[in-house]
Length: 435
Image (cartoon, one colour):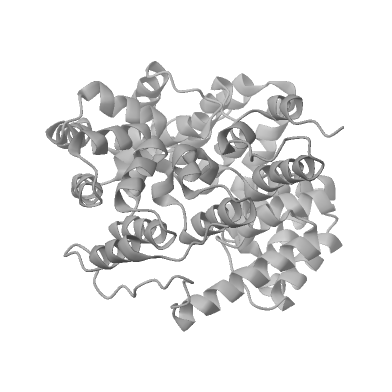
């Protein structure tokens, strides 16, 4: 069985890498077992683990969803979240509605149920909201409970209710006509309704409304920005459409041109820049300095200039990754036994690996190498496996392969990793069927 321990050349390469001049200062070196972590990191991990376990046990969420939520909110005892969940149940929220609230806006779990949340629910009920309206609207837009009690929450509640009703009867035109001209709030509501008519989903609309996002507050600038985004071909039903609208609205043409010119100076063609924008509109939020810094960091990682351009074009999200994050990523791969040249190949073939956590990379790599006996080079030839769900895809499929081999139905040779993990579910079932 292959061992992930470092030997000879690998160890020397890792030591050389750690002492390169561009390494992040004060960054503690990783041991092979990744045991050198700060007490603060340990406490943070305990909090995340407790939060994830609590969500699985109390709401029946999947482990993956619970872990995702624990990245957004952390608590270390169940007292407060228990009180919040109890408050929702006592106000008539169903189990599915409560789960939806927690998945969309988990920050509510750490608010004071009695002093913060209960008064807001009571205020809305005192204004004549029925229990059914209250539970539907809050579960649709839980962020509303994060607003200040009084006129603010009342105004948003009324509008959200109107939009939901308009959705059911398609009375957008009537609702728009009733709004005041030139009023900031009127503009905001009217613009949201325009987006709704274009097909932007409720969830995205309401997040814009509740967050006080600027794109829906103006009039002329909103119309101009919306026209540009539509002409670029963004799909209104996707979050990319909303992200693109925010970026185009936020920056002047001069600022955007300066960002494009910086990219041109690095070797990108103008059309490449806009293709990157179509893939990930938020990449334009990075400063010119950050774009250059990421370019230089990737060069320091061993990629040639044309390779850096290719990686950034394929995965512009990597531009937002910090230098420390990228350097930690390469050190993780080196600790697992990959050479620096092999990391470069991985980055070129699967640039998403640049922003994966060390824990994720280690867990997935050690499973296929230690548990399945695939050679490390299989990860290099099939780097997309790093992006697959271990629980939902890799482990179940590998269990099938193990069962077939145990029965002697696959011979003595382990199938190629790509033939097991890359194919669709249908192809996998047709190729490896347990009789």
